[in-house]
Image 1 (cartoon, rainbow, N blue to C red):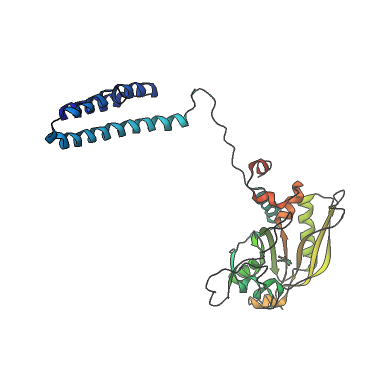
Image 2: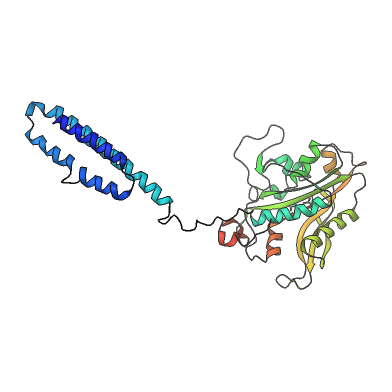
Length: 338
Ligand code: DAH
């Protein structure tokens, strides 16, 4: 009986080896494994085996069943994977692949950076997990400033930096002003695009993370006229020649004087308002220069910062900022820019 089972096993495996499509696999299964197949029929012979031989024969029978069944399952699975990849008719056209494209927010940043590069700005970067010092203190923002409130800042549950204080997700790209001035020698002329984080209620115009683009120019002669010219050129290049900007006095801790920039375009009133607030800027405060070891009697400069999402919304007439982060291709695929 054991010989007979082994014989069936070798034949079954040999024939299975030659099987190369689902139909012949089914034929093979009927021949060897179905109720009237050779293996079940042979196993019926167990009834007639002498009692003392049963354990040995039972063991051999189990082994043969396992080997043959798993060889069958394996073969079957190999057809299933192939079948799920290949269309039934291999001459059918293939699946279309959409060429990769960058996210509309990145496209917007690229476009902004291109304009600044043409004006001679270099690209700078800083970390998103920042120290309290770089995000606030060095930017002339003292410990009791409301922006440092736990309620609008994400502090990390990590040990503080020994020198620079607690760690937090940066709330502004102005940190890169400090990092740039710390790590090089003037003159500086950089833009720093990147992600920022603030605790906020999420709605059509607020998210808990967003992108800003920071700018910093430091040399021995930069003045307010340069700042104004730079901003005017930038917004006209970005939004068209009929764009006008105005500087409205404001307060930022790290610039003095400081301004908010409003822009307007003919025929583009937003919610009935002609002027749209679009950026912050100013002349770098001498206290900031001193903090990074630059002599404010010798060096001067200007800085600016603006939200990228807001510009992307405006460029494309997108109604709601939340669309940027839902990862819905029906939305994202509409922006075929760079
Ligand atoms: N960091 C400011 C903010 O997040 C924006 C800003 C204002 C940046 C004035 C600047 C600046 O560089 O000079 O609200």
